[in-house]
Each structure stands twice: as C-alpha cells, then as structure tokens.
Image (cartoon, rainbow, N blue to C red; front, side):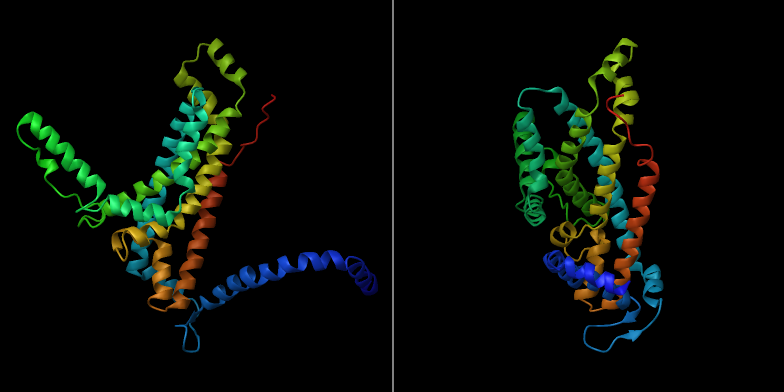
Length: 312
C-alpha cells in the first residue's frame, strides 16, 4: 500500500512541483497566521515579553469591556443601516436602469464609479467636503442661504451655522455621517448586481401578470421581489460581511472617535497602539464568530429555496 502510494506520488511529481508554490504561500500567509492568532487569543502578549497563558480571560474581558461593547453597537448600527438602505436604493436604481434604454451603459458606469474608487481617497475627500470651516457642504449651505437672503431680505438662520458632521457632540451625527458615506460607496455595486438579477427574470412572467390584471406595484411584490431572492441573498451577505469589517472610513474620517469606533478599528488600536496582541486576537475571533452566525442566519432566511429555472 505504501509503495503504491509513493509510486503514484513519484509519477505525478511534476504536477506537485507546479502547485507547491501556491500551497507554500497559502500555508505561510494564511494557515499559519490563522492558527497563530487563535493560539495567541488565549495568551496575554504585548509583543515584547513572553506570552502568558490566560485561558478564556481575553474573551470574557471583551464581553465586559465598555469600549468593545460600544464598538459592537456602532458596528451593528452601521451594518444594519448600510445593508437596508443600500439595498433599497440599489433596487430602485436597478429598476430605473432596467426601464431606460437611452444611455443605460453611461448611467450604469456612473453609478458604479464609487465602488472602484479607493476607500482611502473616498474617506479623505468626504472628510474635506464635510469640514465645518472650509468644506464644500457647509460652503454650499452658506451660498444658498445668502442667495435666498437676497430674495427674502434676510439670511435664514440655518445658513448662518457651521455644521459639524464629523465632530458633533451628539455621537449619532458622526456615526450616521460615516454610514451615509459608506452607503454612497456601495450603492453602485449593489445596483449593478440587482440589475443583472432583474434582467434574468423572463419577460413572459410580467406579460402573464399584466394579463391577470396585476398593477405595476403588484408585479413588483409578486414577481420581481420573489425572483430577486437569490440576488438579495448575495447582496445582503456581501454587504453584511464588508460592513462588519469596516475600518478605513472611521479611522480616516473620525480618528480615535468613540462615536464611530468599529470592531476592527478597536481591534487595530488594541493591537498596534496598546500592544495587547492576545486581546486583539480574541476580538478578531469574536468578530469571526459573529460573521459566521449572521451569514448562516441570512442563509436560513433569504438563502432558502432560491433556485429557480428561468425556462419554466
């Protein structure tokens, strides 16, 4: 048995040599870091001193840590708003693109532009636009207010204020602002995905619905939405995973702000600012467990019975 196995390996040695670089890179840069971080999550380690075994203490500490709970709540709000709002907007934009014929490719490309721009660039540009002193948004409000003031004889009160979107004392304002920027960034991608789903729905289903007297709204809820479930599952899943891992937007737009602190940003600060490597690893695996749980929940709701035959 052993000799046969070695002969088979020797016969296919060239194939194994060709795929060996991939597996070496995969083990070194994927398998080993995952295993090492899991091991590290059970230790107290600051990157200098020898690791000290603490068992489940890092995980228990995360459940009691006020900073982690705040980051978890911020991430939950960010994720729910991003998934729901981006999907609703994307579906309506996809319906619009599915109806228009003139300049459809232009609109599709225009909506998709935010998805291909670097998040670093998006964060810095929006941060500048929302600046309370020289930002485009505040300046636009002031210009419009002065224009209205010339017509009415007095400048409205709302045009005389400086709007602090990113450093407002109310923590909801920065959080909703960062969430809005993220929604702006993902809507275009989701629109293209929903458009592909709409175009895969056979036209004869709509014709049959119209013959039965269904209104456009009834067609949307009885034909379009049910057949978009596979697409909705994909969009919800990918958007949820991306939102749970948000880091660039809060770290660049509102650095060190508790109002927009996400789980990954909190993890980063614990690892590379406070040098609590073991605790940061535990947070990473809590986030992993949360991501898997939500993915399975989505699979159990939107993912059920999503296969259908377009020829039927």
